[in-house]
Image (cartoon, rainbow, N blue to C red; front, side):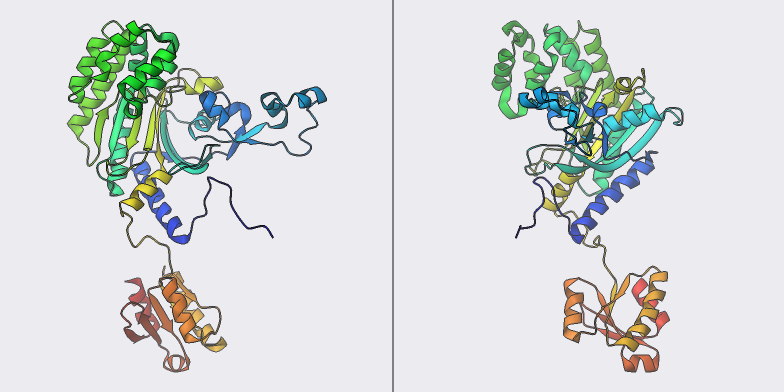
Length: 456
């Protein structure tokens, strides 16, 4: 007999975990609404051409493809089949794929519904995504993303608001001390231009992104292997020694990029964002310039954001995003600038758990369990339960007339705070005996008093 199991990189969630996840969802949703974002949803799978080619070569490899319905091999001729080349066969047998993120489906949504949308359009979306990644701590094959985007505005006030939004959510979750890292794609492009490596921008930035992992010499070694000359690496030296406040770092970058129009523009954008955030202030997060930050280069064109958990927690990024000036052009809609961020729900959950930041009262549970003493008694109890539920009190009846110890044990294991006894004597007096499961205290109450006691 087969042992039941689930695919690697997926999880079941018990009631406590679902309650905690909903606590995070609710906190994020509350702040999305406060900042004026509206909810949308898109299908769990898209047409393959919607997704493929939008995330780079590595992203394409991590997209889960869905087999066509019916006889999916009928369109594959014998020659193609005998070659056993998956890249050639896949388009013949699979026309749909599970979504890899929520950003590209959002771009598709905007283009498809552009005549119904009022721009600038601020949307949020909380749905699962799928990636054929290698499972490890904090990385799963099925996980939820929580995204907020605004499309149809080039204003840098959007970047300022998204930084404030991150700060608001993590403050409300009690997660103090997160670092919001910021960079600008124009700065990266300007650096590549300054050192004469425009044609190797991706290689250059991918190597630079590893600075905190492999160090300065490791980054230089990787760049040499990618064909970036020694003279170019010498010009990069100021990057490896950026120090001081955000304003001081930006001044050093301005000097480095003095001959790059695009790079200078990137510095000016970061200066506006940094100075504005400094003036407005953040509640518990800190903003940090990080010129090695290079996420999402396939579609980010301006600001790039990434959120790191507090230093005491060893965890990857718990959020990120950026500015994209041409994302919708992949679906035929030009000049539609956008900015968006994402919250990494699963990693946020692990961080809150590790730091013991979940409130104790978030599990969804019944307030009272009515004990079952037989058919007549159960009917009496159910009339009260109906009245309690109408008044917003979660209550339930133990389904079987089992021994009292078993029913009490059930309430204890379920962590239900109160039990209600409704036997023959209670029916005669038209009362209920309410027992506090923690203190053991018992009180005899009529229905009105019972309602008031359980609602308090």
